[in-house]
Amino acid sequence: MKDRSAVAGASAHRVLVVEDEDAVAAGLRLLLEQEYQVDVASTGQEALAKLSSGVPFDAVLCDLMMPGMSGIELFRILASTRPGVEEKLVFMTGGAFTQRARSHLSQVDNPVIEKPFTRASFQRVVQELLR
Picture 1 (spheres, rainbow, N blue to C red):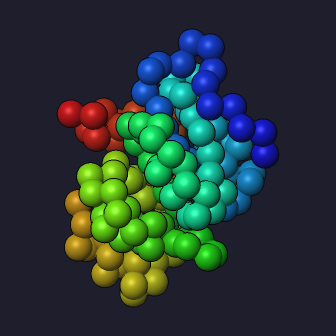
Picture 2: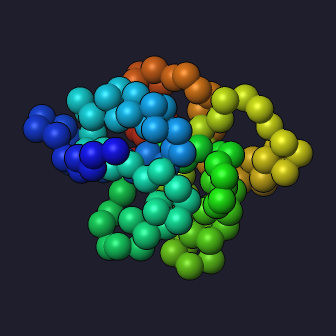
């Protein structure tokens, strides 16, 4: 997938989308890039590299369940290696929760947004994060 970090007319707010399904990631980019500078990572490892690069992100829209490194694992790694960054995670879910996911979500204050969602619902979540 082509990496376009900034789009003309987008705000200064940067959003990282962490999504393993290319079609979903592309759709989220299209949904959000009118309002935000959007970058995409297709794996937890790629997201970790982007988040460790020094480029600041205002929000990280992260799929909860992914092969390899899940959103839960990404959260835990960030909490121990880059404290504060994990607070910017917004977990996305298609509604299928494992017991592990349910347990994790009950222990953190991060927002959870159900797929599919609208730009307006995401904007509300980002505005809450930016406060």
